[in-house]
Every structure is written in C-alpha cells, then in structure tokens.
Image (cartoon, rainbow, N blue to C red):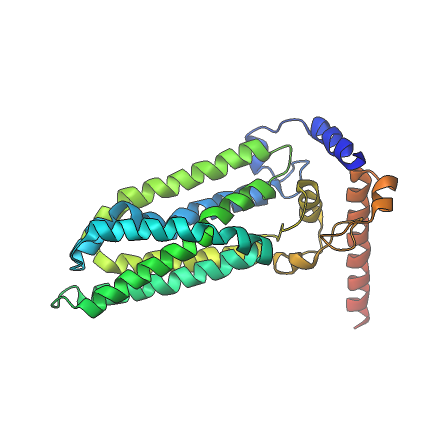
Length: 293
C-alpha cells in the first residue's frame, strides 16, 4: 500500500507532457527522446519484418510460385499465426523481452532469405513440388516466429518503456510509426513484386537483422520490473542495454523478491535519488581505477 500511494503521488506530480517534450533532450524525464525514437523505430520495423507481405499479398505470391491453392495456403498461415501466438506468453515470461525479439528477428531473416532464394532461383524454371513445399515451410516458420515474438512482444515493450509523464503521447507516436510502416508495406509491395519479384524478401530480411541490432544496442530489459523501476533503470548512467537484465532496482534482493523493510523506510523518489547516487559513485570509482592504470 505504501508503494502504491507513492506511485499515485508521483503520477499526480508528473503532469502531462507536450508533444515537443517527447523529442526534447531537456525533459525532466530521463532519456525521453531516446525512448520515443526507440519505440517508434521498433514499431516501424515490426511491420517491415515482412508479416503483411504474406498476409496482404500471400495469394499473389504463392500463385506465382505455382502453388495450386494459394487461398488454402493463406488459411494455413492464419492458423499458424493464431496457434503460435500463445507461445509468446511463455517466451516473454521465461526469457524476457530482449532475447525473444533478437532471436525472433534473426530466425525470421533466415527463413525470409530461404524463401527469397528459392523463389528467385525458380521464378524462370518449371514448377517443382519440392521447391513449393520448402517455400510453404519457410513462410510458416516465419509466421510462427513473428506470432510468438515480434507480433505481441513489441506491444509489451511499448507499454513498459515510456514514463508516466510522456507515456500517452509516446505510445501514440509509436503506434503512428507502426501504421506508417504498415502503409508503406501495403503501398510498395505490388511495385516491389513487379520489379524485384521474390528478391524483395532479401530487403525484408535485412530489416529483420536491423531490428535485431537495434534491440541489442538500445532496448533495456524490463522483465519483472514495475513501470517506476523501469523509469529508474533508464535514469541510471552506468547501465548498458545488453547488461540491463542483471540490474535490480533499489530495495529488491532480486527482480522477483523485494526488501519489505526498505520499502517502508524509503519513498520511490528517494529510491530514484539513491540509485543515481550509487551510479555516480561507481562511475567515479571506475574513473579512478582507469587513471591509476
């Protein structure tokens, strides 16, 4: 109850940010512009993973691949999408946010390359049932990965990354970026299909690899953290994203277990100040060690 009262008090004090503040480097919220651009980038790339390349134009793509019933193929892809979405609940709880997104993007890139390679190699040759089966398998493996990782987890990340003061507007910007990516896929795919044919899959595979790199370099691990603890983590100056999974918020023994006495003694605002003080001390110690060397 003490923690809940502190959170509500902080929420009332934080107020509402302007649209300009979401891109400001002088905002009262730590790393506001960083988090805005990260959310927009992830949601734009969610569409450029290639999911709607299959769902919007799958029948056209598979008909040119000499698959007898492309509409049945679309039904199969939809069934795979629904079935594997439930796997995301396990993955996000067991492995957090970063690794499912990174490995999912790499997995998707691999199967897109296989799909594009076979499609490009056989586009001017006689149809082969073996090649058709591999292309169907590739698309199903891609859909399964997206449904279990980038489909739902990108939205989980958006809900956990933004601070109280700027959350509503940053979430709106991320959603707008998602729809922009969706529009570009829908608009460009017919032209890319005529000009590049299956080679367009290589571009989508590259987008997946770029998405994996962005998650690795910029996304902090928010698994098992409250929204307020996520805000504290982003305010720390000595944490890098690829080591953020090991960070434990002040007053916690692990991310699952907290020190009740600590929460009774300190307010959340005091914990933020204490965390920043600890980070400053560690930074000074590292600088001193570096100068001695």
